[in-house]
Length: 187
Image (cartoon, rainbow, N blue to C red):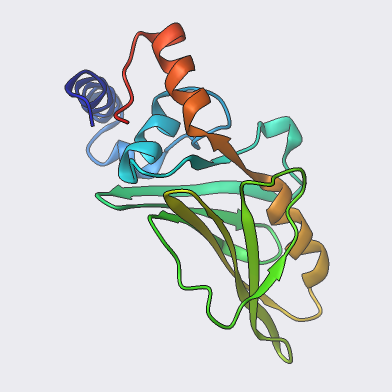
């Protein structure tokens, strides 16, 4: 991560912690929305090779009953969770890594993206609808782990969480950060 971006992120978290008490950064985190900003840049920095970054769509575009949970960013991995009023807290885990093991998953189509391969692995369908969707692209992979109880509208939940997230092009993020915020995103 560039020193400039790192200092801004640390300062922002420290300020929030002072204003709201210790641990404020962990308790009330805004989502990495699908626009150039510090939160999305933080996710991008976890996997510098990834040509896409997972993000959460604008609040007015989110399906009813869904909300952002928490964000966890480390070297080589960024993950966040999505909450559902029907499926519970942390109903879906979204994780960005450099690669994924898609063995046993079925290749599926992605909407309007020739540069992303989608694979779906459903582990359980009897009592629960459980599995993982993988979006694989140059330099990275986003996995979406889900686990829904049957008879809770699991097919609708499955469709909903996919509309809650998107992939933001790293090149666009890099350009927008420089132009709008004067920040550099590591290549």
